[in-house]
Image (tube, rainbow, N blue to C red; front, side, top):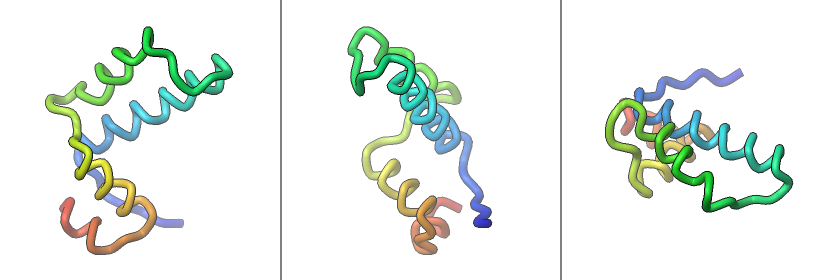
Length: 73
């Protein structure tokens, strides 16, 4: 089992992604622009949501990239 430490902003992004995936599974299609605002609201719950580079770093860290994990600390 891998354990990582994430920031509050990163946690909000992970939760938003999980909710989006859940919505996708429930609706049977990958994108519904009428509901996209809900994902943004979850991702920015603690303030400013992650930008594209920060999301890329978070994904790398979750996959075990030690450099990305240390950069987030």
